[in-house]
Length: 318
Image 1 (cartoon, rainbow, N blue to C red):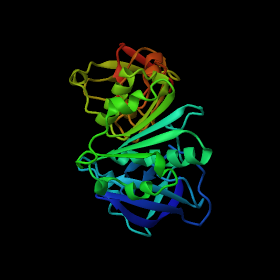
Image 2: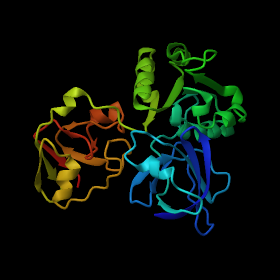
Image 3: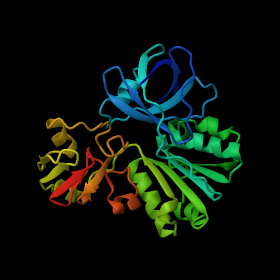
């Protein structure tokens, strides 16, 4: 855990604030690469993950930008109540959404607050002299965080804005945009779950291969109707051989926790990857959005906070 202080609070757009977090003693914070996020431990005890939205200019500061979500479980509303001088604790940066070391053209596509991990990606790509373009989709400029900054950034010539509620702008033509680099590009997309799924679906239709599709969800999509039909199963703890029953209305995490088996959990919806656990045997029923399709097919990992089992017993590396 790293103690930090809120050094500044800036309103970036409607219902979006940017926090500047600084180390309490002025020492340097751990370095990170574009795409990284941190766990923020809020005063209430809630833990939330937020992308670091700018590369460090001064090593003792981090910046995050947070949308006040009307569907929030409390985290974003609490962030919007923070003031300068408030003390928090954060984790060291983690990165599951980093840039691939590739000579291919990079296509960054942001939907709304999904701009936050992509902005430092654009900064890093510009610094490295790599080929890229950045598409930013939002309703209006007033609701688009960093839109003014991005229009004057060093990579402004690579920016494309798509404001759906402006007549002279309109929605992004996904087919046209995605078809241009279907066979020589790396795609990075972040935003609302439905937006990400639509971009990925269109990309696959245009011929993008799965290994060149990179995404980060901030929230899980609405569960499919059939996912409400849960069946009971058992979890086997590999280190002890203990079998734990998981009922139809329980998550694996809840069942394990009741039996004193610790699994670190944060988002509880399969988004952040905190609870990722190895699978020794059995077949997971994946319900997260963290693992890639290839990782799901391999069946080596599962998210106990939300996923279940297709087999009667799922043995976990615990």
